[in-house]
Image (tube, rainbow, N blue to C red; front, side):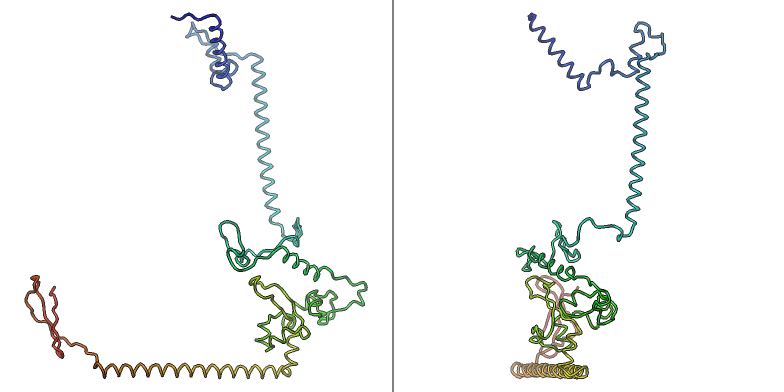
Length: 356
């Protein structure tokens, strides 16, 4: 057996103590203070007398520690119940706040500071919402709205709706030409179309102050493109095309001005109605003429097909249709299968049928 020196024994003892300390720190080996009460009771009993059982009486220090722990546990229980009550009260207050009308909730930001998007026109690409009408050149030929376009749009809006000065004298202020009561004019009608009309009258009289596109002006009032392009004849509102940024800009006209110019051009309402009647009759005549032309072409085509069919019959004869007789016994063929024979009554062609 190898004899260890005194220094080696000290090193081994030191390593053993370090290992025990690490195990105690991890909780693998518990200290006497961490042992449960049951184990303390068992250790308190005398080992030599197993039948002599006596009750364990805690010391005053242990009783005081138990009382302190009980008070701490009760305090934690009260704190947890209080937190649950606070959470339920906050939830109820949030629900009540959501039930309030939206007009009582003040927005935290101004709406004009952000670009407005219509989510109903957007397509979900599962990577974020992308506007299908304003995609970049990589996905579509339609041009997206740039920051400069949006700033110009906001500038025009502020020019229309925010730069109107209030009237100093209410009695001498200009009033609406339609109702003669309101003094607050519609800024769009005043600045663009030079009409003294209030917002209420614009909303209540769409037959006069609704906006028309160029197509509607041409179809309803028979105004030509050169007349609509003339700035001196009609006022117009120029806006970006809502269908695509690459299309030409959209022009809107107020109905009363277009109607007034159309009456002047066609001689009043009766003249406009006569022009509409004349165009409808011309459209019906053109439609009937086109129908007759198509009918004539169809007849010529049918006649040519009939002539071609007769020419083939004259050259090759009429197409023969076989009229076979009843089946009769034909014996057995090369494969040993019983067959039946049918014969054409006109040309004498015979065919064999396998009897099943």
